[in-house]
Length: 143
Image (cartoon, rainbow, N blue to C red; front, side, top):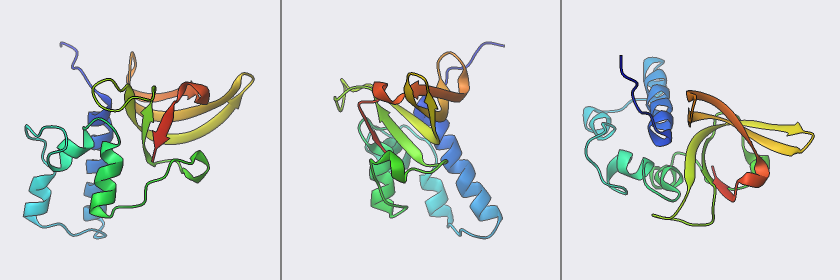
């Protein structure tokens, strides 16, 4: 079979949807059909609808969580917990010239050359899986 492309925002959105499914199955979350329908990925442009916000450049997922009251946003790694959604910015740009990565934060580890940030996402070349990068490579991050 031919390989299928994957991308980071799609990978983390799958985790978001699977979390919603688990909460619904356990009776901890009740959503009506109209709300569930809004979770479907349709040709939403960046900033439009649930998927369009999630997939948007900049702090799309963090903005969506803020708008929906799903939790607080922060930038301090000391406040992060494994399982937090995180947007990594590899440069200081936002928008078309930004370089970012949507991930699930797993923690930090210390190596002889410094602190590394561990995460799960769609990572080239391994597709879905864990990765770690030196924290010094991260220009900014928002949880």
